[in-house]
Length: 111
Length: 111
Image (cartoon, rainbow over all chains, first blue to last red):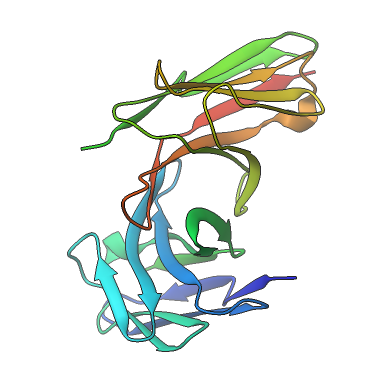
């Protein structure tokens, strides 16, 4: 069966520090991968999606970037965090059609 | 541009009552998904509705899809406290790899 791992679960970072969140999927090949952000009490905002290694589509221009160095690995990064980057970050995967299966999420607080 | 509107956005109800959450979308799609999110947690897939007239039920929740009306409903029967959560609908664009999300309905069920 397929599983998705996302870490860390919580993170407190100072403004201006770098960020790296990692997500890996097991049990499937060539998944579509997604990074979402959810602000407190709000809906989901799609940040990036990837249909293959090295292929990244950005939905919202901002302080973040994404990379897919391996088929089942998706990384969200920032060189310098802003206060507005705080939120709940969710990684998700799908195959064929975009029914998404989510990781457990990373709660990021930028202080 | 595809838009997905959920209503109500917030619902407080008593145990034992019935209620319906509505999800309207603005363009043609034949696939719709319902997710549940518990406070501080990730999203869990509830229902996948794949065609016009599709109806899925699990426990006290029943979801339906009317593609002609561009409407899905999530009906709660005899609500219990454990159903308190935020419910999201998401529509499959079909032409790309993305889901378009509603803003979510926060449901509070009081004992």
